[in-house]
Length: 461
Ligand code: UD1
Ligand code: CA
View 1 (cartoon, rainbow, N blue to C red):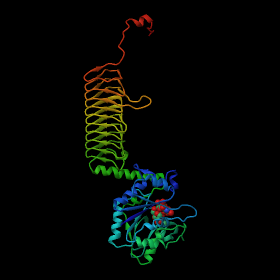
View 2 (view 1 turned 90 degrees about the vertical axis):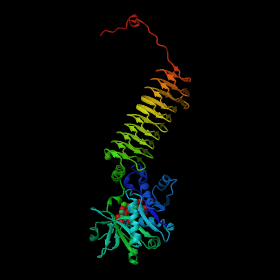
View 3 (view 1 turned 120 degrees about the vertical axis):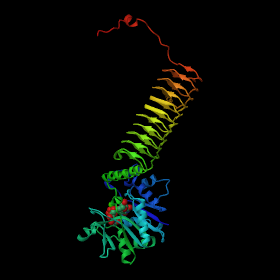
View 4 (view 1 turned 180 degrees about the horizontal axis):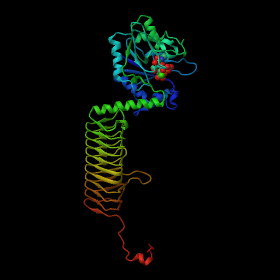
């Protein structure tokens, strides 16, 4: 069985944050989550994450997943270094497994690259393979030192490199694949006799080579994949690349994104063909959008299911379901657990919460629909308020099919409007509106003729 060891015990000081570095998010997911997913998608069954600083917090945030955490002891009395980190997992390394070593702070690594590294490692029957890249500025990275036949000999850290070695532009990504047994043997032989006084996992390469084992280097084309996050500038850089990847993925599957630069789509979101996404859209969480939709400017959709042919403009939709052909916005707000049927019109400044609305119903302007079950073909007039809260508890309102709620009426829950029931404009309804009836619940109009002159109220122009 293949396993991965993901190193994530470093402090991440340069993030200047209370939050452990690997929990900072790009495109809505923790950095570490991307690495774990890439590893799993590369068919690595067991994934061990080495945590140190903030380890409990990191572990807690992956509760309920099958990721395994190992605590690396951190502090002045303990050794440090990538080699020491890998040693923490030594009891979990099978002799006959391939062990892929990854970093928890490189979210751009892809499953494809991990797969290719493993294939290269296996096909060439290497005992250890390191993923390398050419970079313009290799400052700070370990350098790949090759012999005159081009075979990798060792990796030297920047701080330990000779003036000749410093010039090398092929760098160590920090990602490797090793045969389990040989990795364990070599780890027992590394020391911390180097410029940083750390145990370097890079020394495993040198030891394997010295002992006559086969060591390979797999060169990656796109060095951005191994880009690590150390500060928030790098965090934003990774976010930008990830966003581009996600958006291009959708575009190549038939979604039009007018301006991908300012369209924010999280990795879990699914979008059907021929949907068009306008600038400023933010699509997050477990969201599905159907085909032929228009997701208009500045629309936020969070963990919601949107049907086909839906048009939404400048609106916010949270944890809700929207049926085919609905038209929403501008400036509508669907709060959690709103379930809309088909061809519904929700217009400007309408808020819906924890309610179902049947097919072809309309709430065109300025309404609040909370804790209600609204049937089909219902007209919710301008300014209608479902009065669901009495200051103590919430109550539900039932409005049956074909009812008509006149403008500026209040439905004081719990209350029922029966089929074809009409509520007169301006009514405050506290009792059932019966089937096929009109309910008027407001004071009758009184006209006082000549009242203005009687009171002498005319003003000088
Ligand atoms: C390491 C490599 C270097 C490579 C570079 C790529 C070594 C000795 N050097 O250097 O060749 O070019 O990565 O980025 O391996 N970590 C732990 N526990 C530890 C120490 C580190 O979990 O005790 C984790 C860190 O959280 C980090 C990763 O290992 O995710 C790399 O550690 P870091 O100290 O940044 O290594 P570099 O000095 O950058
Ligand atoms: Ca580093």
